[in-house]
Length: 251
Image (cartoon, rainbow, N blue to C red):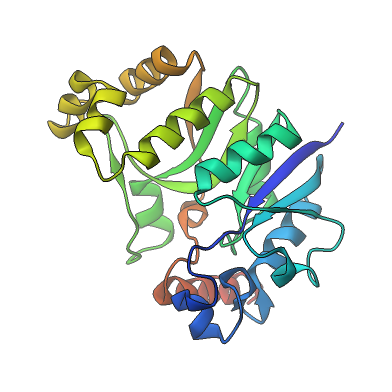
């Protein structure tokens, strides 16, 4: 059996994306990282990971990647990542692995490690603990989420294990729709949960319980062993870092 994979490659800015302009390409997914479009790097990693396939790519301009998509299916993305995932899951179904086109450093080992630890979850997200990132990629600037029992950065790998994962995606859609309305977000998540988060008293167990209460889905954060897994290509400094890390791999 093989596991379907969804690659999110959409960009709100298209040719105006800062990285697309930097690389002189028509879309961020085509930005060359160490000589290769970063989407190509992701697709090659997925194809070299045992047990994966078929691959679906979600992007707002399918024509932009037609030449490098190979046998991957291409879907036109929606206006937000959460809506794109929801639309794709309606076609792909579950279980499904989700990643992103800007995950240029992606390794088969990270995927295998992540999938080996998702048993019993309706939805899981790979993360790297802050201590792990600072150990493996010293000096990098990443965005960290702070819980009382862990600080972590996302790794752009998600396991959509059962149909209940769609309930979590729907919650994500609500939060995205209300991102400019803090009160509505607070009402969605629960005022007590928000207060605990603001006071630094929200731990991972309480977060899991709250999401399960809202979605009837069992969710988990899965820390990976390699801090490089938290590095994606989202700004020029990330491009420089990724090329440096890739050069180190091949040295």
